[in-house]
Length: 248
Image (cartoon, rainbow, N blue to C red; front, side):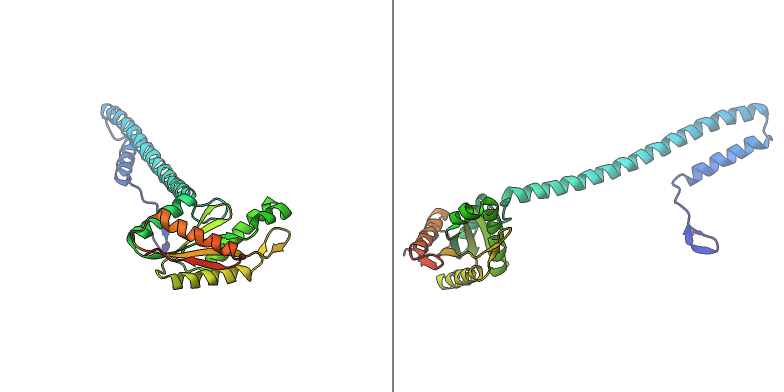
């Protein structure tokens, strides 16, 4: 209800406005001294009980409101923790990419639904990074590689860390030519961008194995073929893309 003369002044809503008014009116009758003694005594007892009950009711409502706020706060926190737990269950703690289990599930789901492309890659001579510069530098390189891959790939391409310095990329492109072109773009982007390794930047290169997969193909067969192409790229001198077609 707006205050008189000032529309910006509001009065706090009173759920018990009628009850409070009744108590005030009864209290005014008693204070006026116009009631017979016996009636006044009876009314005083009734009013005392009524006001006590009214106070208890208000207290219960305040407690209920507080409990509701606490419950809402706890529910929001639980929702945040659930989201965080779900994210951590599917993502690699170091790079933020999908972890091996989650990536495997995504590839299996894609193979069940459609044709797709698959890239398996790793960092060339990554052991030398750890041996010469230490494991913190190696971790920084892995994080930086994951960021560069996300920059170079399309939004709908999925990246997963399969273990160590090995990553997999699931492409929507269904042909081998398209998958090879995407892999070559990724290779060039990594080669051209030195990575921050703490106190220094390190140039790195990657080798990539590419294959095209058909709907209904088993994950093990598709991944083994891309992995074999990766080893062909490494045997061919590293920092290159190699591919294998699906057997007819």
